[in-house]
Amino acid sequence: MAGFISEELSPAYNDNYATIVHGDYKAMNVFLPTMTDEREDEAHPIIIDFASTGVGLGMSDVAMHITHALDPEHLVNGGEEAMVDGYLEALGEALPEGCSYPREVALRHYRLAVVDYFRFIMGRLWKGATLETFEKRKSSKNTVYVNRSVGAAVNFIERADRYLSEFEEERREKQERLLEGDFQAEEYLAAPQS
Image (cartoon, rainbow, N blue to C red; front, top):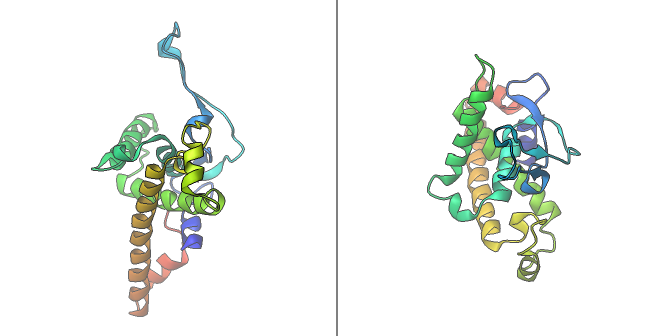
């Protein structure tokens, strides 16, 4: 599934929904203006650290930011989708006329990105994770949230597992259709679904 998910999140520069992604979008890489600035209406966040920037799906940055920025209790009971909907509303206001990012497509991309980011965290940051390492890091603002909060880590595992199960089921159903001679399923299995 990792290859499938990676392909889904790796559009060509001219594919539908392809954009420039930051690649490491988290609070540590965003400077927010202070509310004491004289020109509050002109103050904008400043984003830094573009080392991972490239072509991708914008929901990859959204998934990373939500994973880093929110306590698990903000993600339950529709909170996670409300965050994505808030992003989509702001995006809709900023897109040129005639352009759109349908909610179903955006949510699919978001869920793919959560699973892919989970794969990254598992392989890179949780190799030696223990309750003791989480305890040591719990106050470190410069440490990935899911690497310093057991609650955030458990929530992340649950979300990634739920989304991965959805994609595995989708893939299984498409494979069954292919065996039954549904050639649209063959096209689906052969091409990224962005």
